[in-house]
Length: 411
Image 1: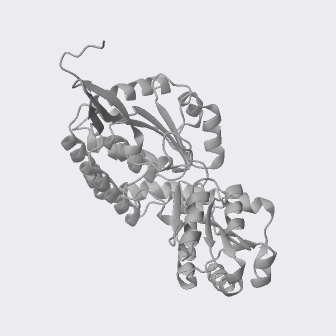
Image 2 (image 1 turned 30 degrees about the vertical axis):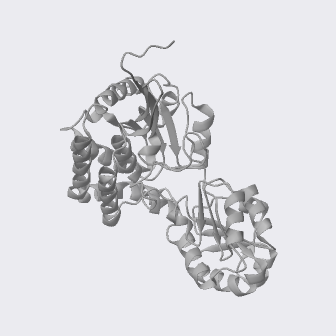
Image 3 (image 1 turned 120 degrees about the vertical axis):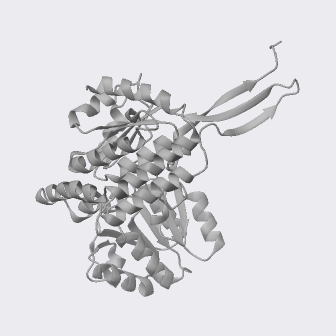
């Protein structure tokens, strides 16, 4: 089936999806969750083909980590689908209502956006997370995955379609894996309502610049942690280690560590030694190099780089103002964190730093749909239209007016 025909088929299936009850929607998602657990060996077998190919082609360790589906991650996907199923109803929610003096009732009602094209790379869990969120919110979804995850994406899409076919037309979720189809997808403005790119900076920029369809951009996550002069340093060490080393290849990992000069001598040798012991390469300013000899000199480009790997930029700054200025210049509106006790410093940071998530005394790794109560996420939007931050089921709906009268006419 060509891309245009597939988009038309998906669009027609979405109309059916809008008609099924919330009860059926939940039962179908529960079935998806069960299918994942029942077929975990098949999923791992297909995923291993992608991993083997990735290793043969020399993909870095962090990339292989993003690609990997093991038993724990499959279980996590299944739990996320259940969480989405059990979350509050989205469709048909009346978000506001008032009655005019003449008795006319004005409501705003939540409805699906329609057909979503999801363009993504390397992380096959996107198929399940985004498929479930689209299903919950009444949207159909066309998934365009990267070639590096072909086997994984295909098995997951097949299992999702099998799980829902007794409840709704399974064409509401479709997978395209040909690189040549991307440009055509971006031209189908009559059949696709929004495009969401999620992946490397080059992919996102290409979609953003070439799509004829509205784009909700998920640009890179160059996340900072600023350690203020009054921070609890023991907690700061744990937070920074978690933010950088738990999963360095994801968009909410810390990429730059900013440290107030008053605590640099005490804090930096300790945290950098721990990071070094975990294999993290340190690229620092001259003050950083003086305090930790194994660090290498950072250049200007390093502070603009989202590494997605075990590499960290470090800079010592004289005050909060300089830290905020650094983030304003180099940040990507994704996730920014401050570790501090002073409420005035925290408040200033919150007001002056523009990001989809401001984190106070915690790891940047919490800017994630599952962690923030959305069940899962389509991605983290770094532009403010139509959403800002992690996108759950609610964030891929819109609202319309419903006007209820009793023979009212306008005079």
